[in-house]
Amino acid sequence: EAGVAQSPRYKIIEKRQSVAFWCNPISGHATLYWYQQILGQGPKLLIQFQNNGVVDDSQLPKDRFSAERLKGVDSTLKIQPAKLEDSAVYLCASSLEAGETEAFFGQGTRLTVV
Amino acid sequence: QKEVEQDPGPLSVPEGAIVSLNCTYSNSAFQYFMWYRQYSRKGPELLMYTYSSGNKEDGRFTAQVDKSSKYISLFIRDSQPSDSATYLCARRDDKIIFGKGTRLHILP
Image (cartoon, rainbow over all chains, first blue to last red):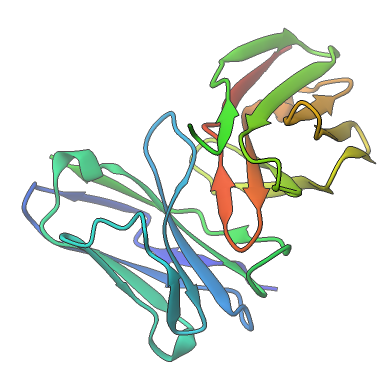
């Protein structure tokens, strides 16, 4: 079974530029999550999708971050404009459903904003 | 108050020792807990999960939940250098909320 795929693996941009990350979840997984993990901290949930609908985006800085999950499969997370404090690893995860099921994580995209 | 609190470490122990990793949680309604392991430059992977209170054992790993004190523990027996990683505790209901993670170093 293929895992969660993310790209790119690394990205360096200047502040005020825009950037986009892509995630392909495990086939058949209805729930998709985006997490932000700042160095030395645990992952922080940014947004959660159930199929192509948003379940929770309470921690997403909506003035600069946006995410979509068209057709309930792949997802993109965008930052525009980026700030220095956005430097982090962005992790995508998926699970069969929300609730008491295992979530599988991708390797993440390491973003450095200079 | 954060939902799940965890000492970030680092924690260094000699190979073969028993490791104890701990978290506290804030809401007594939480029932489902997970331990994830994260190697450097990798995504987290599920190690163990527990429901409600009590112990769950899987090989060298034991997860324990004490609901009266709102305490979650992970014990690693006969620790190996390959166990060196960051260990994340999490509570799980309709979303997954993580603690900060504890960095563990097993010294050969």
